[in-house]
Image (cartoon, rainbow, N blue to C red; front, side, top):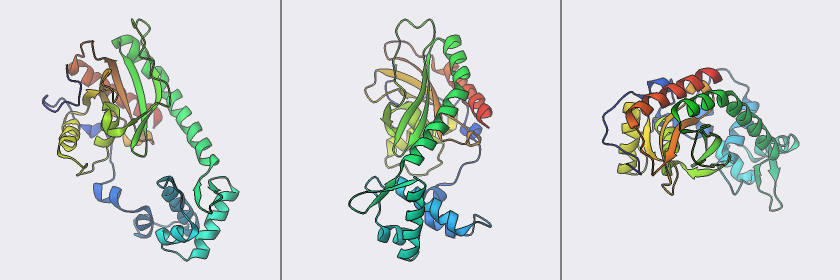
Length: 266
């Protein structure tokens, strides 16, 4: 049985079910440049700047100063300072003692509610597949360079539960669910030939077969949700590594499950 992502099997589908995604060029373009590029149509400039600033802060764990925020946005420092003050007032941003600004509690609360809704909508479908196929179903979303478990449903007749807690974090590149998320991004370069080959194979057949976790204690077949779901996520069918994983039937099953969850969230 393969304990790392497999690239040798023939294709059994494609990622056409994920819907239209942004191109690699759009993904690599800074948010502030995308906002100013004219592709966004008629927008409220102040609101757009505030949202772009929030996106920038979300990618900076150490936070940004008002001067750095202004430089990243391409605006005067006083404009950036007003945006930061407004975001702090609404709880979207917090000001640290050192004067730097970081994402605030309102964003965390909003994401908590959104992900609760996503997990709740997917739960009946995860349960049905888990019981019918006798495997553990795992729903993951992305958070920076990590995949985060939103839901884990064990089959009722499982001899031993995998016990993957909600909120468990794995590097995207270390598990099948994370690789499925990467495959949906349509990036042309992924920082390594082996990784690029794995993701290209996943795009060709519609799913990833590989380790379910960084320690290789589980094996998963994973497929990304479609863009219509409104959240970057994947779903995986997972078993312990000492149990046979029938790839071909489960590959089609996980694609079908990803499609059904996408439709439920659309």
